Every structure is written in C-alpha cells, then in structure tokens.
Amino acid sequence: MKPKPPKSTLHLRVNVLLFDAFSNMLLACLLEPLRVVRDDGRAKVDWTILTHANRPLRSSSGIAIVPDKPIFEAPFCDLLLVIGGDRFREDAEDPELHRSLQLTRTAGAVIAADTGAWLLAHAGYLAGRRSTLHWQLLAEFSETFPEIMVVADHHARDGRWITCGSAASALDLILEEIGLRLGPAARFDAASMFLNDPARPSAGDLPFGGALAHPNPRIRRIIGTMAAQIEDPVGLAEIAKSSGMTLRSMVRLFGKELNTTPGQFYLNLRLARARELAVGGNRSIAEVAALCGFSCGSALTRAHKRVHGLGLSSFRTANPSRIRIQGRS
Image 1: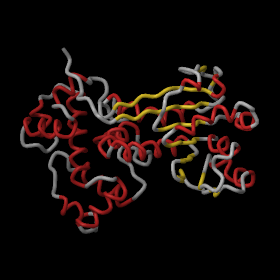
Image 2: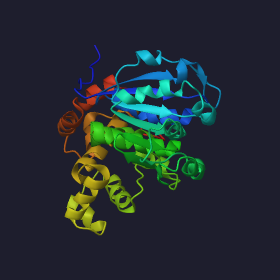
Image 3: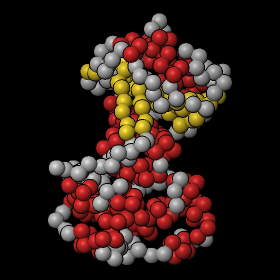
C-alpha cells in the first residue's frame, strides 16, 4: 500500500466565479499554485467553479466550461475569485450581475482579477476603496469610477477586497495569499514549481531551474548564495556578510519579504533539491543527503519528516510525478 501524506488541519475553501471570455492563463495562475499545495498535503484545498448567471461559457481562447453547480448552491468559501473577461462591458450591464455577485457577501475575502474589479466597481462594491485592474484599463477605470481610489500597482488590498490585473500579478498575489493563510513552507513549494527567471538563460543548468527569482535584489543575492551552497552549506552569518549586511538585517529582511527566517528558507532549499534528486534519478537516500549538505541519510530523512510530515523515501513513493521544479521534467 502506498503511504499517504499526513492529513493537515488547514482547510481553504475557494469559489471561482468566471465571466465570459475569461483568460485561461489567469485562471491557471490562480488555481495551479493552490493545486500544488493541495497535492502536497500541506492543507485541504477545494474549489467550486461557478459561472455568471449559471451559463456555459467559453474562455478568450474558445475553451468551453460549465459550472460545477448553480450559484445559489455555492458553498461558503474562505476565498472568492472573481475573474472577469473580455466582455466585461456587456456583463456590467447584465441584469443578472448583482445576483452573481451576491457570492461576495458570504466570502471571507474576495480577489477580483483581470476585469473583475470593473464588474465589482459597477455593482458598487469598491466605492471608496483602493483598487486596481489590468494596466491597459487603468486610465478608463479611474475616469469611469471616480469614487474609487485607483492605484497603479500589481495588486491592491483594502480590507477583504483584493484586486489585481494581469496573469503575472495574479500568480504573485495567490502565492502571497498562500503564504499568509497556509505558511511560508507552502508558499515556497508552490513558488518553486512555477516561478522562473527569464533573465538567466542558463537557468536550466542550475539547481531549481532558476525558479527562485524575487523582485528584491538583496533577496535574490542571498538566495543565489544559498542555492550555490546546497552541497556544502555555509553559516548564515557568512551569507549575510557576503551580501553586505548584518545577520540581524538579513533576518528582518526575510521576515518582511518572505515571512520566514533565512535558516528555514535555506533548509527548504536543500530539502527541495533533495526531493528533486530523489525523484529524478536512481540515487540512494545517502547519496542524495551528501549532495544536499546532510551528514547522512538519516539526518536528511529526519529533516524532511520534520518539515513535510513524512520521510523522503515515502514522499518519493507516494508522489513520483509531483516533485518537479519548473524547467525540469
């Protein structure tokens, strides 16, 4: 019998409200990181696909989709994803809009993506709130809804209302939500699966496939040092010094930017590399341990079990196709 990942007490319930001509890419950027967290057993994550006015829809690229259930049967959710589409102007004038957006009343938080903010604004939900949407519509959005505090940012938070624009912004936002709700380790696993740094053409030859990009150059420099020292880990004080800061400053920076400690992040890097090596080849646990800076296979197994809830061998057996880093197959 295959071992199962340990059950988590964390539960995230998500409703997804789609509008006609929505972006497949944007939907994937919001849902796939949640799927990774669910599949890795870090939390119970489930979602229900709903559509405006309960109608069958097509995405902007023509892919047909039908709702899982009618809106009036939608379960309570911690997070509602409102994903507007290319026909947002017609949808804004649809008499059914207010009925569809009643979902927002019982949601713990609402993320409006792409043109979703336009629909919420038209229905009066964003008056007096900081909001944003796709950058191409910002000027028109501001002129059309002067009562809204429009910000030109990747995403905007105002209480339980969160708005964002492009698919890239949606990916950043959902990773941030995962970190806030489910912890930094869950965020790290989801991010390492999807993030990529196009500025590094040789990333495919590096550990993690260049998956550890971050907008803060100091964070990138520190993470780069850590990634280069997987097999022979160095002390955190040495890493801080090589990055031109004190250990205390580095600890504060990681707490602010990544909501974790440098030590925990470094350990997560080494364990992620260990999983990559274990799943991607025929190395023994002892060989993997040596390549990831652990004194022996037992030390690696204990560390992996402490962080992920099960030993590396069990994880490899139970999840042969899950543990990948973007850029590797």
